[in-house]
Length: 496
Image (cartoon, rainbow, N blue to C red; front, side, top):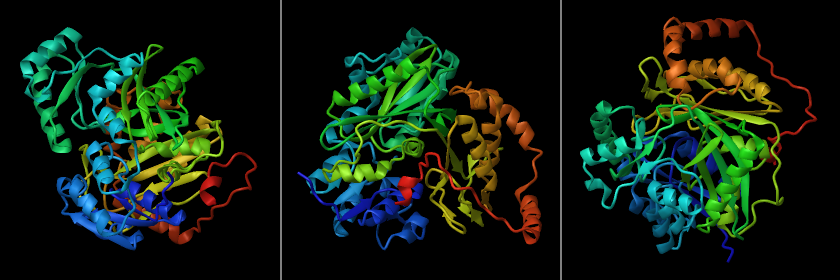
């Protein structure tokens, strides 16, 4: 039964909160920001006329606090809650609490979150559907009581290298690569600590590790009528510390492999009567793909899919939550190529996040160039959460042209006050292996970063660059222009 949504409570922060607020406003829906005290006066905070503080800086007491989120949404008269990504977005408990309090949860049903929010249950569901998986050991309940020694024995049976993974969370948190028995003890202890701190549960499982595989994922969307759309694939192989930093769509794969992956993703989600946006992740190695996990939520990298298809996935989520059809067409045809780079406040030499006040920030707009940013000039970047400032996304008619456009877009960005990964990204997308599509999930840390660190030590410090730019800009006027484009424009949808 269709139900009109007038107010949506946004249980998130940073760039996804900004994106959700913008979409709500474009659709004539009132956004309500549920924020922590650390995000008071953030960009998202300033954009919203209605907001509710749900707790202190610590995520456990705010963005991971189901009761505080429900109470905040109800106090502001919300009809629905959008969880964004991360935090409680994959937790069935939030969906259950929404249903109990007559709030629409803009995400998959509870049963889907229970299955796909648990990596072990998701793996079992994939096996039921006949989808290939890697050798693994999933501990008997309760997994938390399994001893380190007994798990080490199982790791030996699988064969090193193996990965220690959280059963309940994602985003690379707590993920450890173990290459030998000697590395096991420290890796196991540190993984459990990090997983407990991030997700409140320290349950883990172990899985065979493929060091030179590519990370490919299929975007799927199921509308309110149950119609399933596969929205093609993305390559997310460029990672560091098991976290994605560059994503692109479509993936460079043989056509028969793409079709097999897409069919597997659709079958898996249909098997649990899925609803809304979901992403099925695979590893691809030696012409064979293996199921990894399902992300039952909107993805950080969804913009590259939007760009090649000319759609808005957040808008589609909101329409589906109201029982409406989000797409007019029954079949999508991808056009061109899109690349996204994640911009972090980070000291790349020390490889640690950078926090504090930002100085001047400029993100010059351009043709088929998009910045999804969670911060503006003079904003405070708090040290309690992920250090991602936002994303730069570009589209072009070919992959090589998209790479050139991204290089220009990154070089145009100015961020002062904090250290960032901008120069790292520029050098990375200029690398021959990246241009030729010959990368894998270990490429950055094993083949790029060690050499880049040596080179970067000799780079000019930001204050010197700033002085040079000030001198140059005092004598030069920057003018941006372009000829009227006759080819496909993925931005057309967003300008309506």
